[in-house]
Length: 243
Ligand SMILES: *[C@@H]1O[C@H](CO)[C@@H](O)[C@H](O)[C@H]1NC(C)=O
Ligand SMILES: *[C@@H]1O[C@H](CO)[C@@H](O)[C@H](O)[C@H]1NC(C)=O
Image (cartoon, rainbow, N blue to C red; front, side):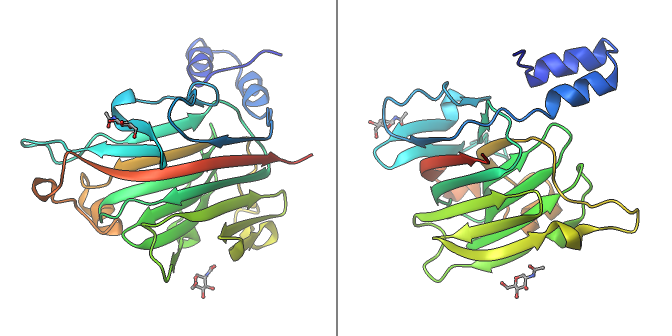
């Protein structure tokens, strides 16, 4: 089976290959269930791409994702991104995560499709946000926040179960939110519901750059008062494909 990478797809688009060829290619789910326990020596290249070795480390606490202190006059630190090699369309992804403890630094665990369908868990300050987007349309009314009694800067198990008719977000095995596809019908007669095969991503990024983004993220970060880097940890990731 031919496997398309994002850059190969961009090249096809630039070369003017018919768009329906591209759509057929990017919509194919390649889901294979797996669990990866992060520890020193784990091969990150098996499931992930787009990493920057200066922004992560494999430790006894799991995968340490870092935003590096920009130092000097820099206002925005360089962060970490892990993009799954495989595309999946429906199924669940679970991860045990300790979010970053600093406002302005966003910990992220999301599905991101080539056409910008998106399903999110994002940690800002001590809040856990859930959201979903259809084809990249910035409808922020899909966002919702939850607080945890024990805070987010200790390990919790987060899961996003993405099904054809509903999305459910879980924390420590308890459903905290469900969105039914039937509730997403908009005035344009289209369900603004993520359906497109997506990569899942783990990341840690500095939202200090843009003022409104920084405000949303409870930032900006006062880097002068921070150590060489700010970290979040992921102990494991478990992917379960739909049969
Ligand atoms: C990466 O983690 C290992 C194991 O915890 C540690 O010994 C090493 O110093 C770390 N490296 C960096 C660059 O932080
Ligand atoms: C958003 O979260 C609040 C508090 O957890 C909850 O009461 C409310 O129903 C949620 N709204 C949506 C749209 O999920």
